Amino acid sequence: MDFIEVAESFSDEDEEVSEIEDYESGDEEIEVSDDDLEEIILEDLPEYLSRDKTIQWYEHPFRHSRRSTNPSLQPGITRYAASRISDIQSSFDLFIPPQLETIILRNTNREGRRVLGATFEDIDTPTLRAYIGLLILAGVYRSNNEATESLWDAEIGRPIFRAVMSNKTFKKISRFIRFDDRSTRSSRRETDKFAPIRELWDSWVDILPKLYNPQKNITIDEQLVPFRGRCPFRQYMPMKPAKYGMKNWVACDSGTSYVWNIQPYTGRINNTPERNQGMRVVQDLTAGLKGYNITVDNFFTSYELAQKLLKRGITSVGTIRKNKPSIPRVLLESKKWPVQSSKFAFTKDTTLVTYVPKKNRSVILQSTLHTTNSINNKENKKPLIIEDYNASKGAVDTLDKLVACYSTKRKTKRWPVAVFCNIIDISCYNAFILFTQVEPDWNKSKLYRRRLFLEQLGRALVNPYMQMRKSLPRALASADIVLKSRNLTDDTNNTTTTKEESAKRGRCKFCPKDIKTSFTCNNCKRYVCKRHFIVKCKDC
Image (cartoon, rainbow, N blue to C red):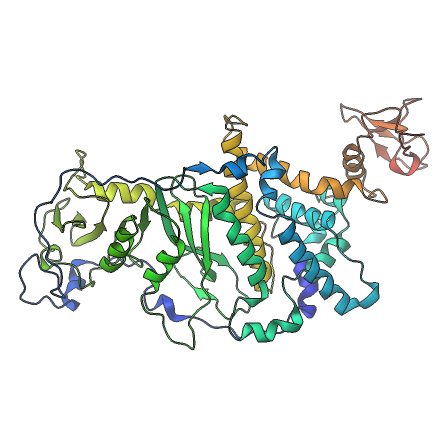
């Protein structure tokens, strides 16, 4: 039984599920063949005049050099972050600082007291950190979807889980964890569907740009947080692996996939589609930036957006849908073009190119970064615009794959919990980017160093709570982990037993049954099981 299943009967009131039809209206990138152009009315216009007759394009470029980018921010980790990172945990603490922990603890303890009254024992900071640490470790071991009974099982589970806290404590935290005040939620939800986690979310998002500055290129795309429960803004996106979930608009550094800004999509307002949504999202996510290049897909790209970004000193590259009125007729009539052929159109500050990768297929890209008709010398003869677009378009998709690989998300019927797990996942990844910039040689030769980072982070978060345990767990392996965390097993003056380094096992000298153990007495060197050894403090 998974930990969230215990909370099902205690979960917040059910919410109506809204299957937003944005998929039908074209949230997904659409590839248009030349046969589909019959639906686009090509009037008898001059070849290089836009279909809406407002833009005059030209066959030849106005300039012969690529427009340069000059970011207004120094790329890489900020001095504020670099001065505060001393180890792995400190890099993570920058994203989940005490003020965020206070929000979680305040609302979680309030919910626990509401349900259990005076019998509820408040959760403190070490307990919350240990809980998050176990979520991270479960993701590292690919056990995030495994039932907690299996994780805590003495025979088939991992000893670290039993060593940190009991299964009962873990389930209690999972049951009562909250991120807002339940008593005022209804009024806040009338104007904000994201109200159950808005305070925590906004505080977290404000932190992201303060710790890292993107390089020259930023990728903007959508992220789907997997979730199939009740949620008023759940999305259906058939092109994503999870298909159902909550959608976020994400701005990532194209080189590292560091999440610099993120915005949740909470669905339509009054069931009315938002006009120029792509333009609004890009402008929101790039607020405060200047001198960068933005890579987007055809959901966002438009001539109007490109001009608005240029006024702010931001260039853009992206695919553009063939039904856009800004495209001239000459770029749409590609049905009879040879394979791997290209045709350009230029204004003073914008470039369009149509490329035919195979018969009856073509793609149009728009760029304000490129101002020439450059084509590579390879066999495919791709325009430079397409090569640069392909090199930077996948940053958000890369982030999705990396986060899903070691995700903390467990089965839940409460969408705020799924959002919280996504916050932890992104924070872990961003912390890894920061730490490796401060310590570039840390496990540099190992391909799995991100897994090592997460494992050390999880252990660092659980250690303080594990050292505070009032009693040892019954399983010997788990008890040994607790003892090591207290620095007792390595000091013969502080314990009556030690564990053989060779892991050789023998029969306990006190047990009437054949109980095997790897612990030996420090004095007589005979084997003793957990039931028959004692622990002494350093003063004794």
